[in-house]
Image (cartoon, rainbow, N blue to C red):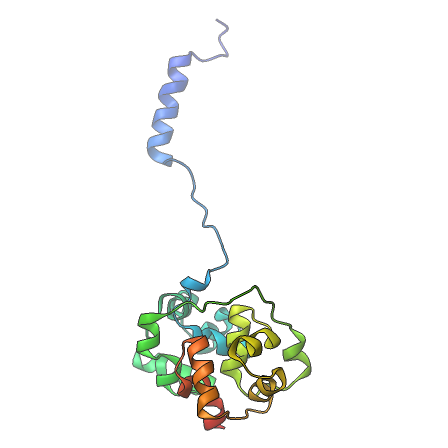
Amino acid sequence: MPKNQQEPHKIQAWSLINRKYLGQGVRVKRFRRPKRSQIRNRVLLAILMAKDMKLSRLAEELSVSSRSVSAWVYEGRIPSRTNLDKVCRLLGYPSHILFNEALLRQSPIVCQPTPSRFMKRTIARSPQSNVILTGLCMVYDFSVTDVSIWIGVHPGTFRKWLHQCHLPTLALQEKAENFFRIPRHILFADCELH
């Protein structure tokens, strides 16, 4: 055997030593799009999506870690009293709407009859007065027309709910509540607050 080649058993010994110190390899986190079932705080995410605010930007404005903000949205954690006040002040909603404990515990999945796609021009061309309802359509990627058909109202009526913040009758509020599985006082909070 030539002098510049090492014996096979020495190479195996070195590989065992290296494996001990280096471990089994480097694990790289996979970034994946969360599924609907992984979103615990749908209302907070809906408001952020409708206002076009990323989780990292919210974290930066509140001076908290982005991991904390993602835990609020995806794990349903409730922030500390100081951060809760900051979030409420920044987004303009009371804490019982942003962090409703009953909704965080349940986090039901909306059962859509057929696939649907939210049209970005809904936001770009029209004013959005009902931020929560608009954001929920964005979270679930629902088109305005499809949601209005599934709820059982005319598309123009549903657009009035979104763009003019028109408060529907109690019967229609109940239909929307049953579809989105969010209490009507949260779904139509923008109509009552503004």
